[in-house]
Length: 454
Ligand code: PFF
Ligand code: NA
Image 1: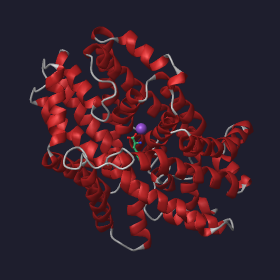
Image 2 (image 1 turned 90 degrees about the vertical axis):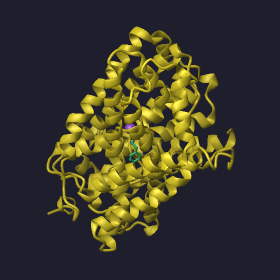
Image 3 (image 1 turned 120 degrees about the vertical axis):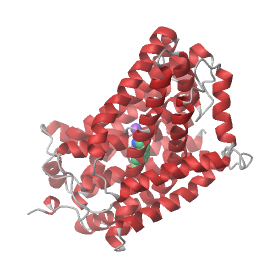
């Protein structure tokens, strides 16, 4: 029996579909529907989208393959995987940094992810109560502003979101979730398509297409490129060990490259559809494209308020968005939780409560940055912007860089080639070229470029 055919102490996915659904559940979330449109709006549209798509294909997909490969080879939590694998290949124990970096990034990501997940929960009753039916843009914007202005409301929703996440993680990642992902994700997709249809009829669809697909590269700053790259990592759940942990529960029977391509493809499709649903409404309603994190909540609740059946569609939409956010949040918690269970001998509920509690606490800083702490800035960024930027744009690409280097240079070629089992040798060589040279060089160049021309 080879090492990689042993299974993890935390269990193993029941089938190939269980892994695909869990990993897709991790990938598809607020990153696609909340963050993608708002950063595209902020950084100017098509040129940003093209850089983002380039990053998905040339950096994200090869790193995803590498991250799953590391997880499945180590069969432990990311921290311990990054202890075991270097020892197995006679490499430095300094690689452990990768595991710890991921855990820290995970806390930061989860802290603001839960705050925004809380907004999504809040919009379920907001919409169901008919607040947005026929409402003017000012009214819809007022709802978002009022929510942001109230630390107690934000805290309540943030707490509820984090508690729901912890509850699911305690029960173990598989139970019931597979079925829910299989049913609810397609419904969310359908509702986005309804919105696209609405945008075609009642929105400025032509304007949206132009905004999304006619690039003006002159307007692209170094920072925009960094943010686009960070968004590619964020949306694919890469660089912090979430996909590594899920990969460690994947039986060696299943193909890593094929599954990775499916997950990345589904994620990209949903982000693009979300853009097509949102931008036509922004343009026709004259909403502020650069308003930042509130963009999607304001735009879609305005759109639902105008369309026939919007009360039902809108309520269902925010419910499903909350669900999509939960299936992502549980994956962010998995690396640290698995580590506490594995190395510290904690019971799963205690480990989960600790991880959730710590991220919940950091999240308070994020929600206060919309009101009480709004005046406090560092480098022109408030607390939430700072944690979002640091984790998404810096730490995730850094994690991805280390993953690519480890898979490309430390793992023996014979091993990775056999494990990945590409149908064609040429694909393997392409992957190796990407993780060895293209990914590391691209990440270093983008980092350097941002430092030199911010
Ligand atoms: N990929 C998730 C999304 O797009 O919403 C967010 C995420 C999940 C980021 C897991 C990082 C992670 F490890
Ligand atoms: Na995503």
